[in-house]
Length: 145
Image (cartoon, rainbow, N blue to C red; front, side):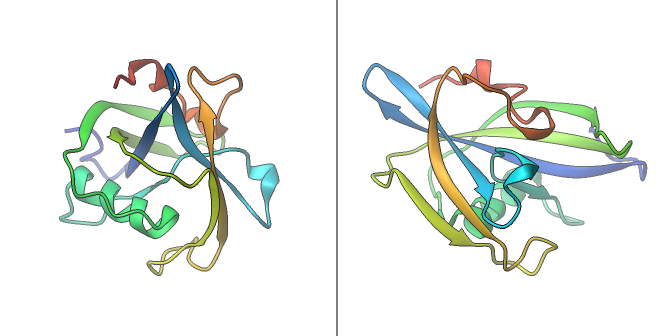
């Protein structure tokens, strides 16, 4: 499995989509106090003994305030080197949902390093017209239904 070595941190990424006319939209956010960090998707670390699919559901709850109890679809896993040189084993999941809100703010919970930050969540049409931070859009071309 990717990231089983100590050299890689493990992270789970949530591609949350909703229907929009003939297409789909992707849920993204920006940090209220640090918009320069770029547009991102909900994601976060995988705890010891936690599976990637459980981690991504937890992160979605902590970072966006969304509970998702329907099936989650694994899209891809890879190894990524961040701009600061740190290596990450990334696991991407698709969450097709029905969500009426077009935008909302959510204070991050969970006690991690981003706990207490406020994320401003909103939707972007697919395909994306601009890149997400840290190559988080690497697998958006795989999104279906």
